[in-house]
Length: 208
Image 1 (cartoon, helix red, strand yellow):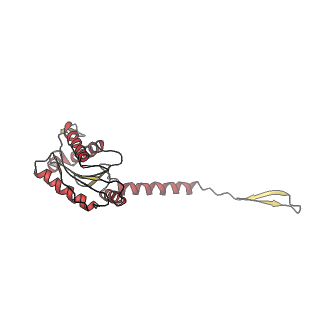
Image 2: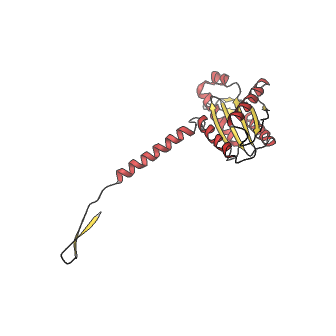
Image 3: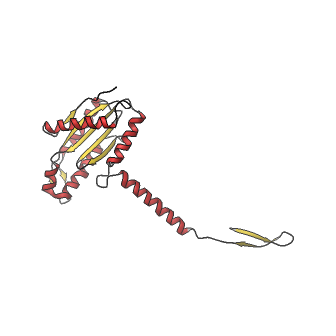
């Protein structure tokens, strides 16, 4: 900031000014912005599998359904088969590695606008916007095939064969709530487990 000093005739004879070093202020602002981004990331992305957290998945899926942006929508619930046995055999580090690899394989079967979240433990949920019944079956069977096609390689070099059970349903955005779709898909998931695991079971959603 500077102000001119003038003589009686109005001629500028010198300038008087001050300068402020704002570098530290800029650094502080950048640090605050970075921290805010990190907090958002912690709240929305599961630190292990890098998919959405339960809270973020529910929030985004609910917002999508409330918006009614697609006539049909499918929900998948996935559970890694015999995960406790995997943890007991290969330790928690091995179990974590399986979770990471499983999440990556599921994502490889999805489109960019699909949502996947880790609901807890070894359970994942997938929302498929604009996905009809037949397409939901196709996605589920792609996941089943990719999961068991090749053994998972653990960090210590060991290999473990992994399968998943899938429950799925298809409803209408605006007609079925997220809670309804999750409940129906979860019931279908139990049907897949009781039917021998490593399979997908479909259950219809009731629409208004």
